Amino acid sequence: MEGPQCIGIILDGNRRWAKEKGLPTFEGHRRGADTIEHIARAAGNMHIRHMALYVFSTENWRRSEDEIVYLLRLFEQLIRTHVHRLSKDGVAVRFVGQRERFAKNMQILMRDAEEKSPHDAKLTLWVCLSYGGRAEIVAAANAAATTGKPITEESLQEHLWTAGMPDPDLIIRTGGEKRLSNFLLWQAAYSELFFVDKYWPDFTEEDLKSIVDEYGKREKRMGK
Image 1 (tube, rainbow, N blue to C red):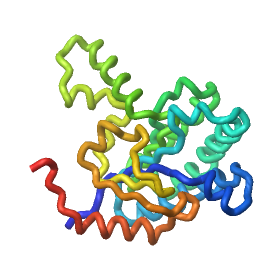
Image 2: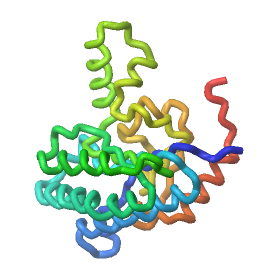
Image 3: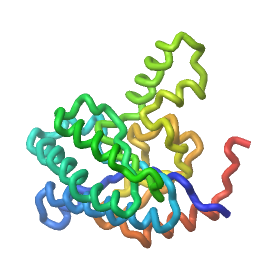
């Protein structure tokens, strides 16, 4: 059976990972960023063509000011270092979400990273920043309405922030929680769901391979 072409991952558990190890919350986020690069390389080697990562939700803006400031610096580092290295290895990047909520320099950094992405990428990494599934659907509906044409599933999908990304074959959530938390609500209609107890910083290539193997054993009826 053909393996998944698109997977989504909810990166959960960075803060709990740090707390259980007696480390600052910030260290959990830093280790989580390192894991992104590692898992992206693993996905590319497994011939997965698209991977969407739920890095920062619209609700995450409610966290403490200190944590927000640190996360914004980490996102910049993620683009300048991790994304830059991945780009050299044939990984493209797309940023999905409310870009207007970020500072201008961050918006420019995201745009430049996208423009410099390889055109013949073996993997496209969809990085969801200030992302929410409901906000995405509302934005798409508003955009589709301005065309003056009837809104259909197809026309609405063309205006999603993730336009061009296949619907995920499977979605993984680390950290033990069993919910989607406003992630890819439109796109996940027929996704297989996998919930992992491990925190994101501990998630490994072997874990990903195990899930992909399990996915291959599941029967996908797609409503039939």
